[in-house]
Image (cartoon, rainbow, N blue to C red; front, side, top):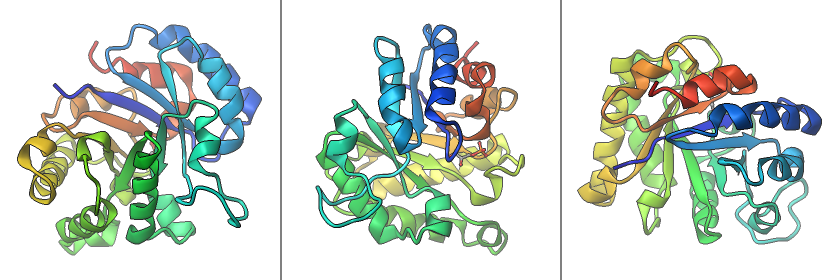
Length: 248
Ligand code: 13P
């Protein structure tokens, strides 16, 4: 019912030419995928990556977007700029943006609404820090991130949610299948409360955080996990392809 979605988040890796080489290697490997395949790439790479992805089943995403249509926002990128190059997905509220670039639940909300208004799909990232998991406030943190971040969303199934426990990102320390499933089931329940139970059933929720070719099968076998947002392992074609083929 929910089509799985495997998305790479290249972060600040790969020049445009390196990225094109990665996509060229990826195209034949993932052509037979049974899921949506997305690469979210640095803004400056988007024209080249979009061109390279043409005619393939690889969709292009951005790593961030400003909520204003245009204006005096030095260094920012608008929806229209992304769409001119066929961008379909935008990562919103990644924990690295929250940690290093002042992203808040309120700005996550503005970006999410702007991405939806432009007809693209936001991949909205939520997740607790290590100390929050340890002091038992994970659900409280998620409640706040979801309630504020998704306020005013009309059709939540047009949003992809990425649950990324901050302690699992880039650390090699993945959440266990059970931890990820339990928390993502909680997120789904919360979406049900904020919107409607049927809306929650139709909303795709990814896991992210040290997901790789080895652990993807166990994670993807969980009832509530509909995909992955992949950092490090998305930078190598065979690794990313193995995750795309989690069902093999
Ligand atoms: P890693 O897969 O490198 O842990 O990164 C996860 C992530 O932050 C994806 O957005």
